[in-house]
Length: 560
Image 1 (cartoon, rainbow, N blue to C red):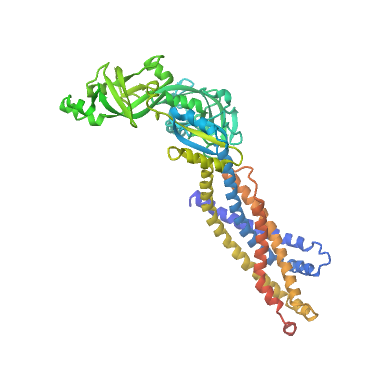
Image 2 (cartoon, helix red, strand yellow):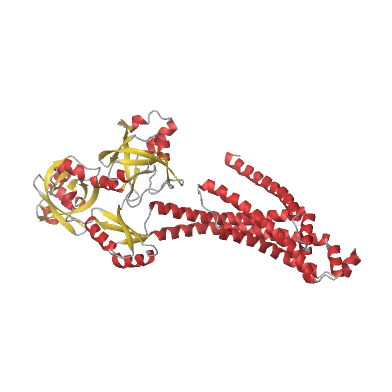
């Protein structure tokens, strides 16, 4: 038997033991309830005395009610708690009502102005389309190569670190308009990112990252993005409020400002272009001028990857004053028989421009590209090189109207996304899990009805003489029904209270497992559980109570 099977067996025995303890405790609770003041209500006094007389049987009925209602309520409450938690967590990192995705750099300012003119809009702020992050590699830690840095780790930890230092995700955050929520991002060391970090090479990392690499506040991490390197300083360590990391995060929960993230992606990125002309000659005609073995390669090489460089990297290649020239690889130069000073016309999405070759170098560039182009040379002609997302916050109560107006203005050219759509999808997924489990748990309520009915029949057998005498001295059928109803309502009240206690502990346990903190139990669910306890008790007692009220006194006394 493996450890998991053993734990399951122990869990089952533990549950049986808890049910036994609950039954014992219920017995004493019943005795305590039976001593409550009756305020001279004869029916109440008779009902409580009957409960006390059949305390073991009633304790079993209470166990059935408490298990059934407690489990159903626990599942429903946890489902509602998950919905509330997801809504809070989502709002902590996505503080917007609507997002418009895929906006070209050339149109972003115009669209911001158009949105701000809408009366329903409160705030508009920009993020990159890489909002969730892009991948980097960890190259050095405090100037020490990562291979040397992790060489002193235990073998298990070193293997884990080697796997995780590749394709590390760097998330971006708009600190100015959407600051980090200290509830979702609990500071363990240092501080969270603030406005003073906008545009700077500062990052925060999760405790998961610290556990993997042993990083600390003040450490400097050198990342490699494509073929380029840059340093980032850790200013804080945070503990995510939910397993998996606080969004937007990464596999290691590394986050910087959106401005820094945008600067990094603008330093170097690859994009495919089509070569249309060489020295003013269409490519199909130019291929005829080449030897047959080279002309066969032209259709293959006509679609080429271009490394677009910007900011410091652009200055490094082309100088500080901008350039309309390009650098090509030796492979491309030899395939097309190109030399410095020749021209190439590039096309992307029906936009085209001619560039002059400034230099020929060993390639490929940035792993796969045969051409390096400065971003400044593309900016005016190719609008879709870099795209952005606009996040829009509506004025109170204006989100639905803003959504309709925004979709009418910008769809289908741009994708308009509502944050409520995410919550709606998540809520449906949670319901798809919670409802079937609740239905399965509700079968225990059927067991509770059977147990309570059995309790009633046993009680009637013991009280036949008492009921016969009551009817012989003038008690009506309604009086007998009333006494039995009060008795079962008392069982329902006690069962409902015990169900709420079990519900609280069940929810508390699941909250610890799922790390949901501070989510209140819905008063609607609490009231529903208590009311359902009364309903179950009444339904279970209807048939035996009705049959009992029809007992003929003479038949009972003759039997006695």
